Image (cartoon, rainbow, N blue to C red; front, top):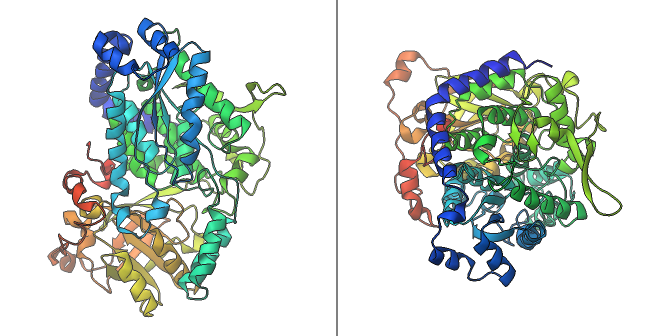
Length: 605
């Protein structure tokens, strides 16, 4: 199948726009790789320090310098379910490396915070910035310059994007991402949502709510809904940084361990010491990022990736713009229904045919670039294959699903749930924004109603409890952008707004903050840019202004006379509102130097 014309036009435009930055990036990577294997530049004293704690076998291998040495960068902690399985990964990786004649060392750890723990809490204001902290931490780990390849262990929201930014900075090194996998299915996600709304309405108590939450989040692995964590895993596979079929295999299973062993071996095979050298700069190309965007739209993935993709691409010298995501959405069919876009979870999606089937369909439809390099080899068609264990425990890849095993969860491209993607770009006199339409009922995608303006989540919940919001409503929560307070997720508003919608009201959210990757029931215009703290139009809104959120035509507008609107002065933020507590004072330089949401909300731009 020929490449879709829009996919080609968008890709060519990205290539042209990025030409200067990309050329400079590749020149830097070329200069780094020209110096040869990393340990060749270390003095004897440097190398002795690097090997001092190793076994005698590994010391000898490191001293000889002929075998590859893997640098493991891990986001392990045992508080968070998604990262707890990584506890045993370093020993598995070291075992695989030794069996292949190489070595592996834990180069360093990176922080991994959970938005599920910090939702509605002050710590959420550090969440987005943790992505850039992770990139910095990983760079420190790899700066010892003792590694021939990097293995990255991370799963969740900001962790994977931060690790990709660091991998791009060390673009001369190969990089293989090893996932931990999703936890087995627990309480159905739609039942969890029902219980949350019942609690918001005061119909049940905290004890019943906690029991439901514990049944949902019940074991090691990622949460099973299709939020940012699992959107990350899709992205790593579609962009060729995972081994084929690795994303959604459950933790602590024989297949999961076999894939981890295979990933470590592959990381050694693609170093500059061998004949299949694959630096990550050759994987992170314009075509790969276009593939990632298409995968995001086709699966109805997290809105957070609209930020992260831009930031990751910039790290590789590639300039993405909102128009790229918007145009690709218009030609990408929505092929998956995974909660919050449906009732299934990622385990059900994987069983129905998963990413292998979806990638095959998108390739056949001309919507993905097949001609890319991946950690598995050349060509994205490798990712239509399915990993399997033989009777002897040996891992192999065979033919993947040729058809969906559940058309309620996964459909062919020609008969998709909708002909356009899960995300849409909004624009108008209130600025630019993103809306996730895949989970919003078609009759709820356009809301025109008087607005109520807030500057924090608690005020919204208080107004709801006081009965002040029981009407058609556009709820505006401003001063939530990256410069204002680090752009927290506002997911705790979902039960409240969802309850208003269930009462028959037309309801929408407009904010310069973020929503959880698990959100979507209520139409939400998020990442509004310019943000209020920069004097963006959202700062001029007043209670009672009629706002139109149009998820069909892609518009975000306030219906106020032009002269009156132009004469209004923007509201000002209280500079002390979010400055201290829970470590926020340490992130003042981040807030001062962060770029806009359109530029990835990054301190590196």
